[in-house]
Length: 209
Image 1 (cartoon, rainbow, N blue to C red):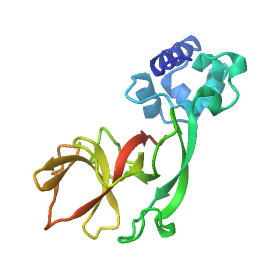
Image 2 (spheres, one colour):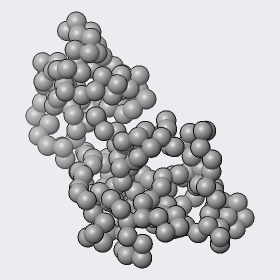
Image 3 (cartoon, rainbow, N blue to C red):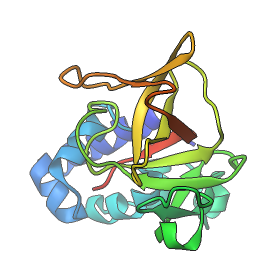
């Protein structure tokens, strides 16, 4: 099976061979031109769950793109991928369990190379404070845990706010700093006067197409 970079190069070669532009490939696949550009410049991983879409647009078989034997491609499981159904949280009611029914607004199915550990939930990113790492509109997959290491990105419930914020964590003495990726935003400092609660660690970012 091809690596991510090999798949991208193969798709680029097929696109060129067919005499297609990125605009035409976007139209044929139904995906955003900006998303395809990011796949091609490798700033995003190639979406394995969209391989059938690319295969149809480029008039090849999915196994040709992935570099697997034709007889070996039957299901996502055959590719070594593990689909996991994950609840998407909306507003988080303070004092309630994270996955309380009233917090769940839907579900998403995500693919993992290995079966993930722990309890997972998904959040829709709103705003640009974590760009370019996590763009507005992306879906983040979070593993529920009460603490994370420095430089890891966490979902954090701040004060009495019912919406989680996504920030990079930095511990400084008795304080926790929530660091944005976008330099136009200031860090948020958590302490006794401004408490917060870590909901979990971001383990995957899925980009909406």
